[in-house]
Image 1 (cartoon, rainbow, N blue to C red):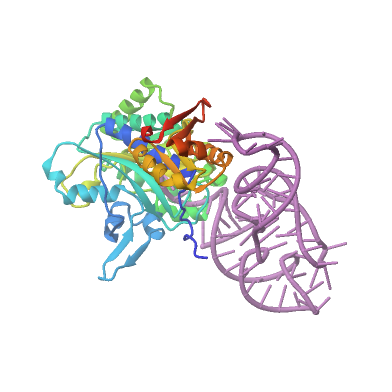
Image 2: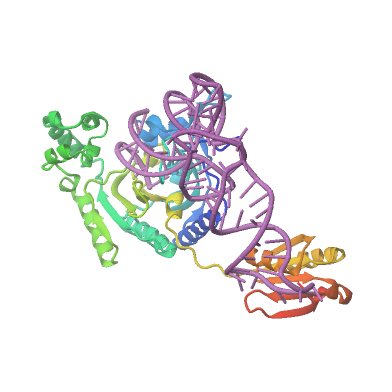
Length: 404
RNA sequence: GUGGGUGUAGCUCAGUCGGUUAGAGCGCCAGAUUGUGGCUCUGGAGGUCGCCGGUUCGAUUCCGGUCAUCCACCCCA
């Protein structure tokens, strides 16, 4: 038997309903915030991700589905969505056009990781990217949008926020942190010693207790923000408080992707295991320039659809549409015609086989149809159809032509 | 990439200290006086016991490998 590749899943009933519901809900809310739908290719030049996500990240370093195509090009399946949208933004010269541009997208992402709860090799994200707005109010607005989406889906969460600083203050801080870490490195675990060179900020949230003891006095970004970064961050947290968002300042929150600056945020759920991040995002003011465009401030987020699927509470679905069947085979052509008329406005299930009334009712019940309509011996002679409302149990006999 | 758990009917699982026809519940199909669903009862269909190899007279059961899956580390949405 040929089966789906490791870490790749089919989405079928009943989960497909939740997948669709999440997309529908998120898309509707994004539109209300002025975002429009865009789609970018699943396959991009590898260099795009190396430059944007960052060569030092695990995503680029060891998790990409990368290969050389038949034309000799180094390509890979997108591991995330932002890079492609930024490439699209630049390639279509929207950076030169100026003004504000807000886009949303959704679709599969690919990372060659070891699968576990909430982590697949092909997974789906819904994301938004806002270009051209430098104000921290936009960061706030985008967090509100994520909040609206989760509230609409009935999902509980906690919000973690942090400021990662900007090109002015971050490198200064990083230097200070590295020299601090080098002084205590003999006390740190192997992983942390390696991280000093690759990703020093990650050392801060090491789970090793010995490491944590020695990190007690480590410098934090929050104490080293420049004036603008600090005032933006203060503005943001005040707005969140004023709007009663359940946020927590996590000075150790870092983003896995290199392109973030200033605001970083994450929505986490305590109900889905170790992979608790259900949405993450932040500001990335340098990325457009970094990929060859005109410097353009930007902020965005992405949410993980599979992780959210475990949490959504679907609204109760009511019985809907028609079930059509026959007890007399000769009535089938006329019943199918009626079915086609009904389908202009209703969901219709047609059963081709002759069955007992009991079997038809059972089938209609199982399909969740509101009405069960059947032609038997008595109806056939009158050119009629028997219709039962499965909810009110009301029964009627109609002329077959009257149906639809 | 590392560590641990699990693979027996469509689903959830039991079981065989190695030995004739491998079980349950749920689901499915059919009936329970002629044309009335969701409840109940009866009957039925459905399994190469993940795959490959080893040990053995004999393996679904023991051993090895492999694949898949789950959970955690790591990483991240």
